[in-house]
Image (cartoon, rainbow, N blue to C red; front, side, top):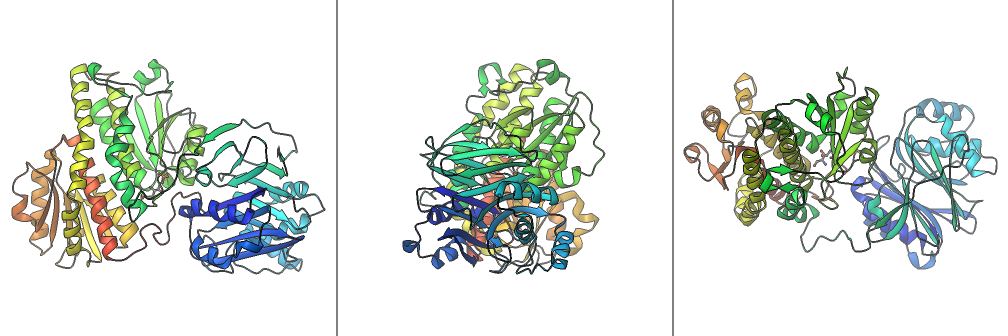
Length: 610
Ligand code: AGP
């Protein structure tokens, strides 16, 4: 899940590429590179690591060029080093390409090219594209690209330049996102893996679909398909001139986004709650009333943090709306024999809207003719455009690889959706009013957690030295424990395992000792007593225990070594204070362990490869 960028226009193209790549860095930061055309020759710069290392290698003053392509890498094939960094070239260095995706038949193609005498410089699948383009090149870049695309299998978003075509960029896509932006006068064209690279601009944008090719020249753009038919693309307007990716004075994007949550939770329900009627309404949700009232099976599919939100929604939909619900890990669902009826609703949850596994699972649901709804943060994303209906989180851009505000906004929307469906079934107005009233108190309860961040920091100091930690919870607190463990894994590299507390005695308890602490979530009244007995079993085996508990709970202070007291709330909403407290805990442990919090190793923000 790399980030590709391209620029053709009047401004300094290499500078434009550097700025674009900085805004795409969360997609991968193993290595980066830029290629441009100067005096009919290809020039290029590559560096391992972040864009800042590449920037150090480029002296912009002498390089005021008007065409360039760039790439920031998340390694799939070949180590993270200069040799495997993009752009990649053909042997004669006439063509340069940048690629996001995986060429599934690259080894067969590479062998065939090698048999024809082609020499390769890197271990990547992407270099095969450059060599194939060179083999197919007959002075026409478009013809060359069409021929080459028909030989490639797998997912790809590419942009390419040729030294003999100094005013042309060709880009194409298949199963990988690619968007093109340009100003009204077509003085400049920007190509990117996603809209984030256009932040701070007002542009016309078009999204390329599978096997569409865009041919960009000075002041003109043409989009065709593999049959060379002209495709008329719907222009969308991007107005993000006033948006920026500043950290607003916080040290890391992660901390900034954690502290945004009182506001983002509110934004997720504003205009959707009609408390006096105990009702919920979603703008632009156009499923028919009859379908909504007859849904008898909900299948939620997602990955990572979004999957943890799906697990929580399963309980919401089953307990509030009495609808049979399954939460499916997308990368597994795609291999299932999915059972769908006319009254099945498939919901895809995704912050980025670009996660390849979720896209593949959604494709399966569509093949089975299921009704589809997406809950996404990025409007115009692939998943938003794939489903019949969408509900947007309105959380604003989430830059940190470690998702936080999107998670609490997902829970807010899913909670609202459960009440929306329940009110079309047996839930009475009074009950609806109560649940909505409680939700509106949540931003303040989260604010209270942010106010005890220094206390959480103190606790983090005590637990940061441990390499293995168990996270325990029951019922809604189990997915809360899963999410808390994932945060700690992602940014502090602690081997954090989450378990339903009742499961410990069936095996994992064997790992408990003074070296393996337990972090427990007890803010659920329904499971509180049972949680206490599970913790006593762990305590009896010498475990250090840190508990996240509601202020009105008793007994835990006698078992746990440390307790972080959270605002009381109803069980359904106890996830919010618990999750935000756990996010802060993970953050402070990572600060103490000195990890690169905004660029966690081996990860990237949106996972666009399967
Ligand atoms: C969460 O912190 C991770 N970045 C990751 O697990 C993420 O939730 C997962 O890749 C799904 O991403 P999505 O919500 O954009 O689809």
